[in-house]
Each structure stands twice: as C-alpha cells, then as structure tokens.
Length: 226
Image 1 (cartoon, one colour):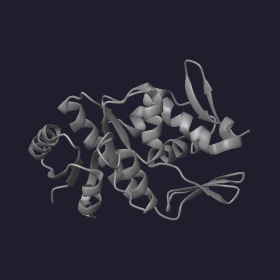
Image 2 (cartoon, one colour):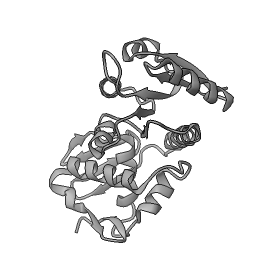
Image 3 (cartoon, rainbow, N blue to C red):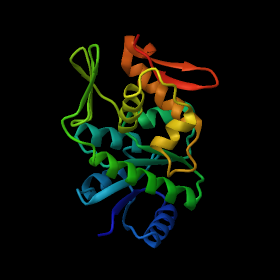
Image 4 (cartoon, rainbow, N blue to C red):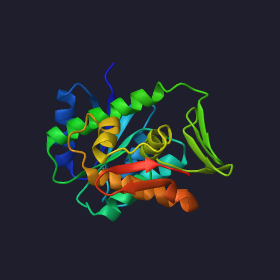
C-alpha cells in the first residue's frame, strides 16, 4: 500500500511540483493550500506532512504545535525560506521532525522524506515496556516520554532519540557525524548544525541537568551525569 503524504503550501506551483515528483517516487499525495485546510484534510492515513511555514492565516509552526498538542504524532517536515538557527529551533521545538530551506532540490526533499519515514517505522518497532533511569531522570521507550523528578518534560521525537542514544551509552563521546549516521543516515543533506540545534534545545529542556550532556571541542557530545 502506498504511503500517503499531505503537502501544505499556499504556492500552487510548489504543491504541484512536489506532488508530481513524490507520486513518481511511489507515494500517494494530497495537496492543500492552508493550515486550516490541512486540519480538515489530515487523517490517520497520512504517513507524513510536508508543511510550509509562512502562509496566510495560521502559520505552519502554529499548525504543528496544535497537532502535537492534540496528540497527533504524524511526522512533519517544514518547508521554509527562513533558515536561521532560531527558525530551526522554533521548528523543532513545536514538534517538527526535519527542516528544509527554500529553494530546495527535489533530490533533497526525496532523501529527507525517505529518511523521516524510515525513522518513524523503526521507532514503531521499539520494544514496549523498556525504561532507562539515571538518578531521578527516566526515559520511557513505550510511551516515548521523558521524566525529571517524576515530572514529564515534553521532547520532540528527534530530541528523545538523541537523548536515548547518549544515555544508553554513558560517558561515550559521539561525534556529530556518528549522531547523524544513527539518526539521519538516509538523509545526505543533514549537517552538523542540525545536531547542534537539537542539542541546544534538549539542554534547555533539561534545565538544571543540562550539563549532563557535555561536549568536547573537536570530538562531540556525551551523556555524563556524574
């Protein structure tokens, strides 16, 4: 059965180009021109959303935030002409799974779509019931939740995956290249900056325990709660 993708962009030409190429890649594609239409059209059949950020009416960021607040876990890839670090942080913080800057190549879009869908499928296979606890910090792999002192801290999918990778290998240093290979190995356009943006956001959410994720210049990141 073909995986179904919802393309949300108020530029008709971009929607049609993306639709044509994604259908050639073997996907089924639905197109809408606003976030409001996306709310009405999105269903459990959709495996992924390609979402423009700047649209008339509700923005892509606000739509993503609303979907996550409603408990919808469909992967979201943002499409945007805004590509500063703050823009990336905003996109990831509201629940985005990836971020593609305009103008983009169709090859890049194809690679990122495949990578996000693969990650989503692999995550669904994670054994239920498994937990990892360090001090008063717990990662629950069944519910994909992160707790500090018994209080749930909302993490995006990618933030959770990075923290899980580091926490499962305490004190081991992971280079940015290794993290990309583990989490984005099928997305050749992912850069080291993407890793840094996620780490920055993750540390902020960890609050007083931010120092548990330490870095060594020229080497990478590690989980070191000692």
